[in-house]
Length: 123
Length: 123
DNA sequence: GACATATATGTAGGTGCGTCGATGGCGTTG
DNA sequence: CAACGCCATCGACGCACCTACATATATGTC
Image (tube, each protein chain N blue to C red):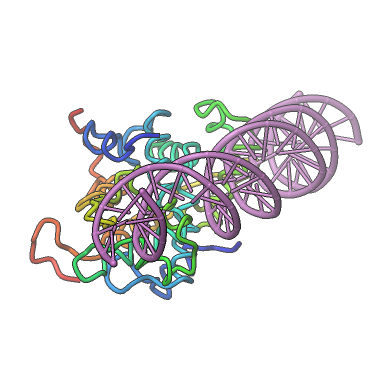
């Protein structure tokens, strides 16, 4: 599969509320959520986000997770292909960092109507 | 698995940002996200949310999804056990409706800092 | 009580996914 | 150039999950 989020946020996938979601949109949204729905990957995102410069290499992530290096690489690949992470190779190290508003875009798709705080904030 | 979301929102699970998320919290959040990460279940939530009174019975949901009745019941059960749906039996019919702020709670966990000010929140 | 409808549960097959060990590429260092 | 460290890929194993068919439970009806 390719960059799911890129295709999701750009052409504006249907949000959960409003009109009944179409089959194709449901599959794309489910694809990105499936990338998030894993304990190891959630911890990876959290670890990278809270790292000194907002980035981390694989060698720093295997120990906190207690997983082997190939497994960590596997999860990072899934997160990157989903559009949640960016990869930048500097020398021998591969630094992963969060794509700024990727997770926020997913959160917005889950709660499109601003009925929460009853503020005057409009779209 | 019990009511994952009920245990998740009440005792305040750790959000994705901020401190590195703990293993136990990651597993619980992943559990709820896994319930969401399915095309059929996303469409079920969307169909129920956009139904006339915000509720629907199983017999109304099988046709739009193109799935068998046992399969739809199975997905509704998973969504209910995750705390995303409520079930109310009236006569022969079982009416399912969204738990008001359940999905919103998940969305908030994904993007807790309005502005990432890096301030410690009280636990 | 027998019957019909709506829903839930049980069982089973097929598929997908997380994990690991082994392997290979590639830059760095001695 | 040879040795070492970082990382991605491959193959395989085991478990969990989606779906369907068959069946059981529950409610309402005649």
